[in-house]
Amino acid sequence: MARVLLFGPLRDLAGWREREVAATSLAELRSLLAAEDADLGAALGGKGVQIAVDQAIVRGDAPLTTRSEVAFLPPMSGG
Amino acid sequence: MSVRLTEAPFDPGAELTAFTAGRTETGAVATFTGIARAEAGATAILELEAYPGFTEAEIGKIAQQARARWDLHDLMILHRVGQIAPGEPIVFVATAASHRRAAFEACDFLMDYLKSRAPFWKKEHGPDGRRWIEPTAQDHADRDRWD
Image (cartoon, rainbow over all chains, first blue to last red; front, side, top):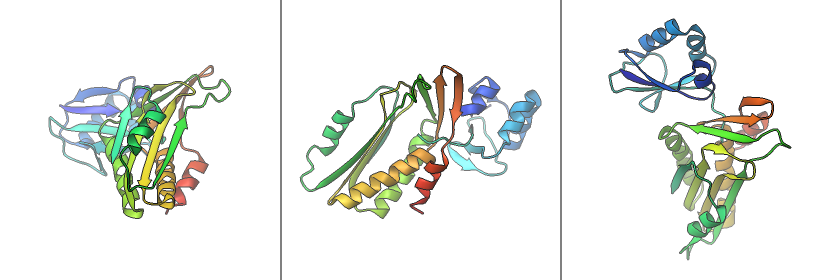
């Protein structure tokens, strides 16, 4: 089970901040989330949304383990 | 060098006193304190969200850039997260150098980065509800001065 974290407007849209999802890749995780909640699925692929796996930004697909932490980071607002 | 996030209010004066203590060779300390604005009643509470660990690490990378660019003795960045009331300090940056120019410029550089690109998500709670805030064109232009 990968640990999934949502931040900022994505958290409000989904109605949750953190959950566990059984997925072995980022692509699988995204399709599982999109199948459950199409609006969230679209927002996760939205402009400027970055993805961090274990706190490092990744582009494209990435393998996930049961201990992976996946964070969806919408455009950052600065402090 | 220190980069810290805190949910609790802090006292910029006490932070400055601690930062300057024992610096017999520093010569110059510049600081910036950002204070949450009430926006004439439009903002009752500012809510700032960070990604613990990631946010400090990303700010730390910019702090390293500042150290590479200017000859600094030390720097510190303290940033509030969570719920912040108008009038409360939200960010404190201090830079220490032998001479003032490096201290001033590094402090300015760090603030331009923090305001435009640091991994925070900011929401205003006001009488008309809540809204997420994004950096302004001015924030981006301020940061681009350093490219």
